[in-house]
Length: 632
Image 1 (spheres, rainbow, N blue to C red):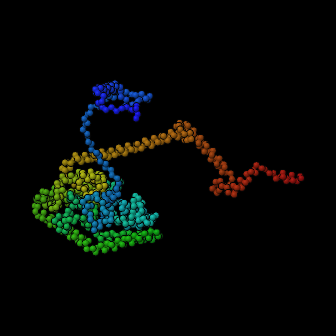
Image 2: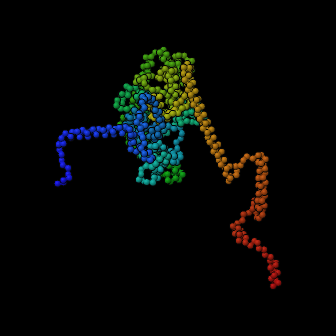
Image 3: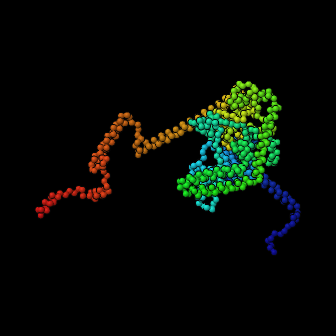
């Protein structure tokens, strides 16, 4: 055992001294804690890393009394109206849906397009595209009027032989498409659709009116006289057609021929459908007639190609004829379809019933309404306008100028929209203020004249947006991005002087607004022109200074006096005279041509002269040579 190891002493074995020792130890520990606490309060706390450049501790006592400032109540936020951006990226499908009209396959379902005009059509269901244009269309490939015109999915029109030739020249023959030569969009042969160009005719004196004027996109200019027709559209429908005996269709007649769950989609033979319907069903006989027209155009193109000797184009023209003939066979087979025949016969019978119903309702209304009440209800302006249209005098007897008002139909609710549109179906409408004036004059839309001819005092073009659609609710049947034109007309030709006096302030404000707009545009144009002139002048001045500072250019010198300029001119004349005289002397020596000019030496003469130049300084005297020979 280790003798030096301490022995174990159990607690409590030391007797009474053990308790006092423990108390002393606790007192010492408490004193040490108090001393450390005092030291901590007196000595600044130096956190880790708070030292200066020399490694000395930095006092941070000034941070001990730091306190955050008193919080203040935040003010109420002010909400600003965020301006919605009116700009939208260009969309080809939206452009085609807004500016083209379509002949559709009769077997398709178009309930969604009938309810919402912004929904695009399935391209496969389109049989023909209708385009209204006053300008003559040209094929971008051959730069001539298109033969058997076809439109691509991107909206460009080509000749059928030209586009077939273009597709055949693709590098990869396995691909069925090629990029459009205008917009570089993909073109497939299966996507080519026939086109029918419809010429506008709303402007009565278009040829004389547009002389010396810049024609707008719609073909209407200020001062033109435009024929317009009264359009009716139901609030819950997108179908808008001219008000007539067959439109709007009475509900009792519709329910007799069309099922309640079937949508009312117009056919191409419906009255005014070709001009005003955005889309319509195409019958097989109509499509066959259109394709036969393409055959005639292709035959003319084939005869022209044979006359020109264009062998390369003949093959593509014949291929186009083959495609057209195949389509004609398909439409002939569709004409034998019982469903198509039944649908066409149903529509024919329905329109006959509508015409009979309108005549019967007109007779009944004429019997029920007395003559005096009709004379009282119809405004004087309406009677005068009808007399003017009929070529009669306005001072006739009351019995001679009595006219029946427009017969009203039972199914027209008070929420229907009435507005005037160009008679050829162009998106040309009357200004809303002019419609209000006509409403004040005629009191009811049913009393409006069905057709009017007005003179345009101002033409305002716009594009249909959401805001414009909300302001002009009667344009709810048009798709977004559609180009529309509003006409301000001379209402004094239609309404009375009393009505004009009521709206005189608004008419004056409209004229003032238009003049202010024109003046602002002129000011902006002048400002841009002056800015351009100043920019050009600055560029010329900087270029002149640069040339003056460059010693190589001597043409830009400081301005000279008149005497210096005359001296310089005389010196130049004398130098030119001396040069011409020296030229004449040089040209007088040597052979000349028949015109008196110096003859140019030939190549052989030049070579001979160059070979003898080295001996020109040597002069040989033959006589002396002979004499020397004799002496020897």
